[in-house]
Structure formats: structure tokens, C-alpha cells
Length: 450
Image (cartoon, rainbow, N blue to C red; front, side, top):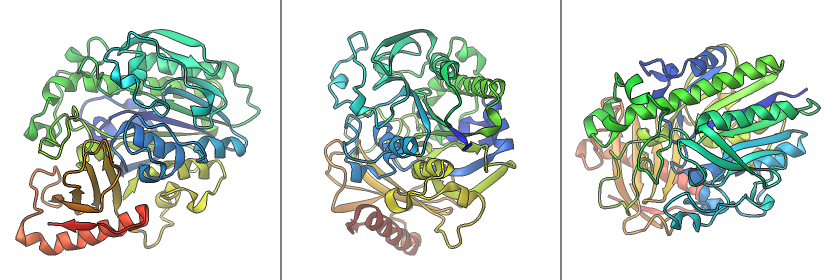
């Protein structure tokens, strides 16, 4: 039988929270074990550091500029063939648990608290998933760090008591109580941790996190640029540790059911968190900013794939984009979507079957500002659209330099050299690369000014 596939993804988790990517504290022992068994991607980057747009991309394999989901609170469009459509056609049973964030138009956002009625996601807005379903559209409006509710496939409200990441995992494990094994399964576990709880303005770790992780070491960018990380990091790490503990519970259950050896687990996050250290300039339009920038703090994410052909404890150093995950998941299911989805099959990268692939990634930003960036191993170049409100537009005909970093001497991106005469040639080269990406992704070639 074909491989079972589990996509376990977190929300707003930096790559450097994980031991296998350099975290000094013992936060992620279960992920670290998967990395030893499978393949870890040391340089994986988000193509869109905002929750809704990135999720729309994960479900469609298309850029937000194509689907129209360029900011939060835009529904997944009808008529786009989704990951769920393809994989169910290929004979898979599907299960989706957790945060969806692709079925509301912003009405919920206008209400400041979660103590109001939030309804089940209508079937036609579930992206083609017809199987097991335990989800809320905006999960932080139906729950806090502790306690809340989601809805099942029959629109019944399912209340839960306890730490949210544990309860979401409980619901994922309940899938196996009714799984008959006749078809391979594709399960998505979409955790909202370690996202901050918007209505309370804090990261909500399990009780005791502040004491347990008080000996945290801040990543150098957060240490230098301040923001609110010093206050929030113990809870943030507590959230990450909880996610990992629950990953371990999932692995344990797969082994108990005799499914582990035939299951591929993909662990990733939608984007990172820069803890209010970036986007402090006049280009911002008022968001509480933790992401929405092309700095590594927001774009560099953990990515580990283990099981099936992903084995041997390999570390991929090449730059990859998580825009490739839909195509990669479908390839595991035996489906070749060709040019119907963006990105590449990451197995080809892991097995070094991609001669002449450009070792660079591209990202779009379109919520707090409209911007684009290209990153190579040595440089990061980003542009923004002057005067364009990111909540109202997905793209612009005109961009201007935002920043250029020389990663060889400045890996933490602290010294912007976009206006440095010594980097005129580098900037010209990076600008051409970015224009090529925009043309390929969006079908036009804008103007970029100094």
C-alpha cells in the first residue's frame, strides 16, 4: 500500500527553537530523533509569512497573488483544485485537525473576544476534505492556551479541556480509533502553537513554562534588536516543547498501531517570529508585528521529513521553500501535478537529482506592507511598495529597496547595505534575480527604484 502521510505543522515557530537546528535547550527531542532517522532541511524558508496566505498556498500549490488569498480573512476561492482534491482522487482517506483559517471574510476579526458563537466551517469551504474533521476556522477565537472547542465533520461542536496543543493531538489520535486501514491516509495536524494569543497579547505556554525555560538563550537577532522576546521567550519555548511532546505521542501511537514504518511525517511551520524587532519603520500599517517581513526571523522555518524515501539522517544544506510542500506531499502519494503547482519535489533535492537548480528562494509579503524578496546563501534582498497599504493590495507595479544583507559577514541581518556604494553590483544582481522571480510567479516585470 502507498505510504500514509502526516503533515504536522505549527504556527509561527522559528527554526532555531529546535535542537536539530541549533537550539541549546532540550526543547525538541522527538523532532531531533525524526531528523536522525529522516531528512532535515537546514535552510527552509516560508514563501509568505502570514497565516492565511501561507495556508492557502499549502492547500493549492499556488501563490497568494494567483488565488487572491494575499492577506488573512480571504476565503479559499472556489474552483481551485486543492491538495485534498488530488489526494482523495488518488485513493487516500483524509483527516484534518486544528486551525483552518481559510473560511472567513473578516467578520470574526471585528469581534474582540472569543466569548461569542463561532460556527462550523461549511463543507464547501473545507478545501475538498471530506473525511475526519476536527477544526475551527480561527482557532484562537474558539480557544485559548487552555480550553476551547472545534467542530467535527458533521458540524457538531467538540469542547476540550486542557492545554490546547495536547487537546488538538488527542483529537488527531482519535482518528485511529475509527481508521479501518482499507485506504492509506493523509492527515494534517495544524497546531496554532506557538502563535501568540491575540486577544491577550502574549504567548501562552503550558503552566510552569516561565520557570522551566528561564535559562533560555535568545537568538542573536532578538538579543540585539530587543522587541519583546526577553519577556515572551520562556512561554514560547514552552509552547514549542509541548508541540514536540505531542509529536512524540503521535509517533508512539503510529508504532502501537503498526503504522509507523509505512508513514511519512512532515514537520514544518508556516513562518517564524521576529518578536516585534522588525517592521518598525514607516512602511508598516499598524499590525502587532511578529512576522510579515522577509528577515530570517520570520521566513526561516523548521522542516524535517521522515519515513518512506526520506531516510538516513541526511542534512540538506540547499535553500528550499515550503511552497514545495503540496507538490512534495502529492509526489509521496504517487501524483505528479507537473506545472499545476509551484515549487519542486523536495525528494529530488534530498537525493541530489536536481542539476542546475538555482539555490535561492522567493517570498511575497502582502499584509502589513506589500513586498517581495529573494534570498541566496550569501545575500538577502527585499523591496517594498511605497505608499501601498498591504491590507488592500497583493502587488504593485513599483517597488523600492527595503534592505540588502551580506549574509557572509552579517548572518543575523543587522546591517542594511542597500545604500552602500560597495554593494552596487551585488544589489544589481539580486535585483535582476528578484525581477525574474516576480515575472515567473506573477506574470509581469515591475519597476524597482533605489
